[in-house]
Image 1 (tube, rainbow, N blue to C red):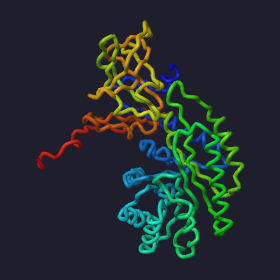
Image 2 (image 1 turned 45 degrees about the vertical axis):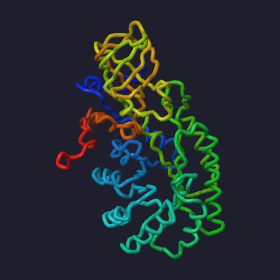
Image 3 (image 1 turned 120 degrees about the vertical axis):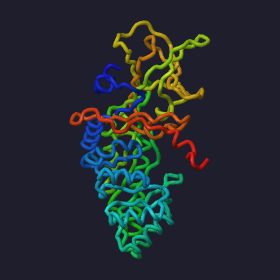
Image 4 (image 1 turned 60 degrees about the horizontal axis):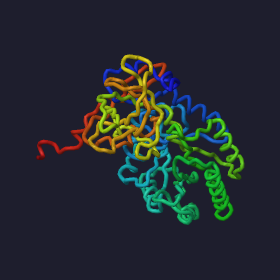
Length: 401
């Protein structure tokens, strides 16, 4: 845990109020560049900004592409000045008005995914009506609501001569996250390779690109197995080398890139012993922290105690670390052996760079959204967002009552 604290700027520890997130932009950029170098020249990276939109601007400068899955995410990119040439506009449902606005504003600079025959038809019609060529990736389904089956993809490929204004770049495929088995990833790559070869052999279609989401595992808990990036990506690179597909390979990653680059700081507000159980009540909780794979708070995420007086660890006791919500489910860690806690001590949780800031149940009980800070050596500690009241979102306007 000592290394965890060393990685965090001192200014963050001295914040007057908590809870708060910190996202280390330098660490994120360094991680992206490291992974790019380990995969080069076999593959390039696409950052899935849904993992953490606060990292978008940095990702635009160091990743080859950004996957954007909603009109709101696209507006974030527009405000940040992200080049549209880097944007893959994805999403299982795309509204016609949103597509048309994007085409009129950006002239087909971005790439669209097509996730159904109906969505493909809509993109085709808008392209024709707006007299604007579009570039498409055909999303192949992994067996859920996203993407199309192989027959639908073949229908589009077979008829490609009828829509010359559309460039079919290739296939997009993503089947899920937190995959512990590399052999399962290898099997997916093998099947994609066979399908691309089939399209070339039967329909004369040579894809320029395969965009693939490997869903690499992120060790969130102290009992999780951890594989060094170099070892993991060396094995994965060998799998890429075995493919017969010779086009461009783009790897879509979100969690794997962002998770290690974030921290969450919360303060102990009350300590009590009830029926022999020690409880520490925090000003944060499950409405801010969301670790994928956590089960009834039984797993221990990586965190460290910061005593308010800067003291060293003394006697220990077992605590349940509970949040501020009025629900018995608001437990971050069910049994943690820690130095004796007191009000004002702070807890620093790590590996929260992906999803927690957007995926936790942040509107529950109308508590404020936490502050968000960004760190870089060039800019220092910057407040990206102050605490945001949510009660205005959870009640009707007074005038309507």
